[in-house]
Image (cartoon, rainbow, N blue to C red; front, side, top):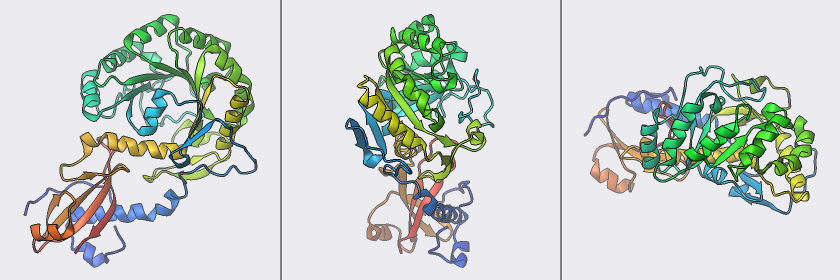
Length: 403
């Protein structure tokens, strides 16, 4: 019987075993069981976030005829999704944080207060060279460059962008910015370095700032796939609708509308507005504005009725649940153990044999065959969520003894 060293886990148990039975198990399994119990206890709150289009309270919205509804309602858009959004939905992309500094302090910002201003880069690689290795190993098909405001460290942005552009497979590359620092020369350099798309957060500058609209027109000379990406703030609905034609005329082809959410320890948590609790499938808690989806649908309807060449995408809590599953699968090349089986929902399953305080882990198989392979052992099936970063602790979500 192989002996495995103790693995540090967060204190997480299943109600199927008595406290005395749990106390007699190896410490590692006690921690796994505790994790499962904690995860199951939160099941009701997780399931309070449905995976279908939520009802629109107080208003009777008729969906535009051009709307596309996919993934059981988790994906809603008119026109077409940008290549980056399609990859995001599938979880096939990675984000590179060029800097955590920003030249603005937007009330809806979700940057955590505890984050310092040091360069974060990718969670899986902290140099461009190692990052290209990661892209090839995991099959990353899209990369976004964000912050903070990435244009504050333009030389670093170009370095990471150029390295990513020559990676194999060649990923689709896009940039998030508030646009204040963007110049015509920067646009040329970004294009030459391999950037495919720029996404402007116009909510950060008041939606109709003429200085930023001119920046969009300049960027449109280099990039055919320009995007406006903003939170759908219900109180700002009127001005967004007023600006749709202006944005389209300036060269914007995609409008991404994020469901307005509030996270603790961020500027957004203090933002005024309605809110109801939301829990992601992995147990992460936040709040969302119940009127935000209603605003998104009204904007979709208006853009459709105006026949604008503007594709409108709803980026909802429901959609984020879907893409997080995809990202867990994407990182499996780095996080999956040799004895684990990857599942479609981003989890990993394995079997465990227990005898005299020793543990042996092996790939899932027929329980009868496993009992012959490990005679006299107690066999268990275990499932964990695959991590989104190397530092993320294991979250065990299922455990059962098979004999």
